[in-house]
Amino acid sequence: MTARTEDAATTEQAAMSEQARSVRDFNRYYSQRIGLLTDRYLGQDRPLSEARLLYEIGTGASVRDLRTRLGWDSGYLSRSLRSLEGQGLVQLRAHETDGRVRVAELTAAGTAELAELERRSTAAASELLAPLTVSQRAELIAAQHRTRQLLRLAAVTVEVVEADSAAARHCLTEYAAELSIRFPEGYDTRALVDPAEVSGAGGAFLVGYEQGRPIGCGGIRTLGPGTAELCHLWVHGDARGLGLGRRLLAELERQAVTRSLHTVRLGTHRSLSEAATLYRSAGYHQIPVYGDSPYNQLCFERTLADDVPGKAAPSLDPGGVRLQFAGGRRGG
Figure 1 (cartoon, rainbow, N blue to C red):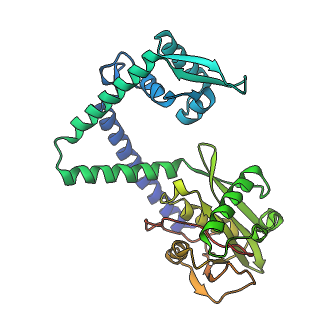
Figure 2 (cartoon, rainbow, N blue to C red):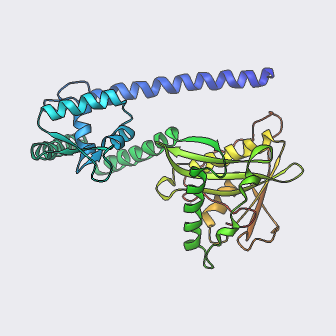
């Protein structure tokens, strides 16, 4: 590592520490402001954790799903469910078709308690907003929306997976189904890349996960000496706008550089104008159409930085990109 690189790393670490202090300060203020620091959340005779569990159970949920959604360990969830059972608010039963799965349901008293919780929550939020002007309220809601997007993005994990794994197949099936609707001519699944081409030393396939659910993917394969091709960059509809497409793109570029592939090409369809916007904003320039895929109607290329081994040039997110996916060698 050069002295310049060390200085940049030190500066980045200092900035990160300051930002972490700012986040902690906000968390302390907000948790106190909305009454989280008490065992009587919203004036009811229970802490926030049990109130949230009532909300998540709603019309019924499996214990497994509750554990995933809340991020609680089995012991903590079991204790919380027993507490609500003891209060007569929740009952547990076996799943209708799978006896190994337990389902939590609200009792009549639990349904009434949840309705009261909803009423108090709405009243508390309204009281918080009331002193603000109409424009200030709109500004606050917009800031909350963006904060939630960034927190979701921060929680997503991106992993290199086997291209024929269940997660990869799931993403590619969703990808092809969407393109079959968006493309006027439809989409032939035979255009999907051979898993062997996006595996091992010659390529990689990435999947993005949110709470264990695959919500995005992308592949990179060797096209020629020093040249990689990006294919099948896709983000699930309910995760668009987070910046995950940009994150997947940057990681695919890094995977290319680690394989000494410093030129990245890709093709996409004219129908995917948002995809073209993404690539241009990430530093790709349009090149003549290459290959024989009918879906690669717009082609792009970028030369990646090679001054830092194993690290691609940064793809900074300008925000606002709503749809991110690209065509592969055989299209889409």
